[in-house]
Every structure is written in structure tokens, then in C-alpha cells.
Length: 118
Image (cartoon, rainbow, N blue to C red; front, side, top):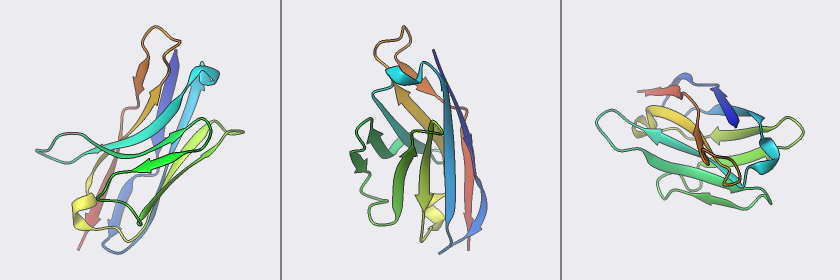
């Protein structure tokens, strides 16, 4: 099993920055890739960014050039650095892990709220 705990959300002004963290525990070695998703009120959950075990990254079109996903293997933590935040970035951000070797395979954190104000 894998447990994910997000932190770092909060209120920030448009144009500002925020860094989210996702601490993983449990069967960490079985994780193939991790990702950040977000869900704004009334909208579907969307992919923000992914990072593989080898460090390859992929970003959603709406955050390219503004967000950066990274990982610290020693701390079993994945980060999402969010810069030049916009009002439309307001959402609950969820950490995700894919671990096909485990029974559940897909894991989600409980989410952390990011609110961007004008």
C-alpha cells in the first residue's frame, strides 16, 4: 500500500508563487510515477504534471512554463512549484501515485486547497 499526504496549499495573490509537497510512505519502491492533479469547483479533475521514477516530466497545457514538478527520493517527496499563479489555478490539488505491483494500483492524497486571489 501507498500513503500520500499533501501540504503547502493556501491563499496567494495572482502573480505569486506557492510550493506544494506530497510525502509518500508505504510501498514506495513500487511506485512507477507520481503526479499532481487538480479540481476546480464545478469542473472535472485535470492533470497538472507527472514525474516518472527516472525523472521524466510532463505538464498540462495550462501550466506549461509556470509550474515545475520535482522529486526528492531521499525524502520520498514530490514537489510542485507553482509560479505566476492565475485566478484560474484556484483548485484542490491532489497527489497521485501509480503502483501497479500493489493491489490497489492507484493512490490519491486527500488534497490541498490553493486559492489565488486578485
